[in-house]
Length: 481
Ligand code: ADP
Image 1 (cartoon, rainbow, N blue to C red):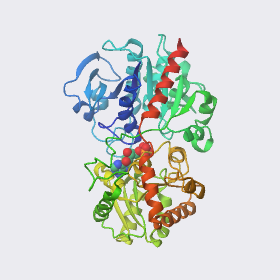
Image 2 (image 1 turned 135 degrees about the vertical axis):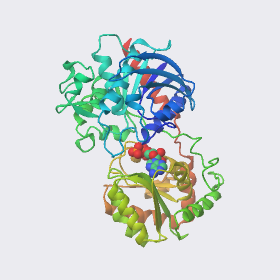
Image 3 (image 1 turned 90 degrees about the horizontal axis):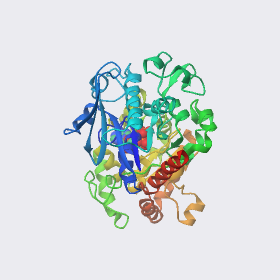
Image 4 (image 1 turned 180 degrees about the vertical axis):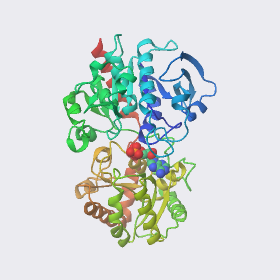
């Protein structure tokens, strides 16, 4: 079975969030399900650099205002097809934002071109390879479904995966014509979203199937609270929506062989975690009490992630003798507030503003607990790394966080299944109460140690989810026969 992934980010080439992790890891996991996946990406500078010996597959003399060509090659174990169009993609840094922090004004062209080329590959094949299924990731790929379904040629089925519905790719009505889309699709049952062209909406309306990255988020998306205006579209297609949890790369995230951490350790021999705690404390200039947990946060600093709530709960955390290391970047006001709070709480709160993959490994290894107080969280990856590293996640009961962490309540403790802490509703007081519960649990070092070992054994790889995606692909192919 051949599957074409269409995406705007992919680890290890370019990443702004969990979407890139999934696109980079899922193809290898699918291989053991008999799926041959190729990933179509824009040829940003980092993608081009990873394909020094790329083969030119095909040229497009006109590609939304300039020349384009498809190149292909293997990189980082992935079969990559890249759309080279320097006028659209030859820009360093964040793929979506210009240096002024605003969206590139031609993002509709940049991702419209990607979708149009994806549809051509789907219909015509390229390099003697034609996909049986097209797998679209997030809004940047969504328009592919419209080009396919509103086109005149027979097309393979496609599935759209929602990694985060907060990003929908909305553009003015006039872009419909610019992008060569048929006017007949511009209505509320088509790709129109309240007078605008909606890339993600197109992906949801015209794809045969929809998936999202956890069962709980799949349910939440049908409600106004989480659906961000698309809840009706998703509810109407309820029977074609599946929630499939993300996995993590067990080679990259392996405390028994992680080159970025101070000392390796495992569930069988967890003692090395203490050396990482010490290294983490030194790195963040913390002076943690051995009787209270050292918490960490590795996150975009945004309201979605609930990190304003954590600031409010900070006095309770510090009052319990606990300490906190924060690594993140994002909203200027949150960056400033965390930096100020660190100044006011020397030795107890350490903050690094920035993006640092290597440091994120040390944090997962060195902390006792990772805090993820998100207002919404489609799947979340950092709590999965936390489980794997025995860094018990303390999470909001929402989306994938609810599906992956088993709360240490009385019943779960007695049954011996708890792996972390959940709180609900997502507000300051319940978060502070959960921090209290975590501190109480930490004080019982025997029970804590048992939870750490259990968390480290919790399955967080791709195996189950790759099988679930392969099943969706097979069902789509069957349905088209
Ligand atoms: P989202 O995609 O909403 O940002 P996820 O939890 O799904 O959230 O994925 C975030 C990914 O980005 C994780 O791999 C996490 O470790 C990483 N990450 C986030 N912020 C940072 C940072 N400041 N430094 C290093 N890695 C980070």
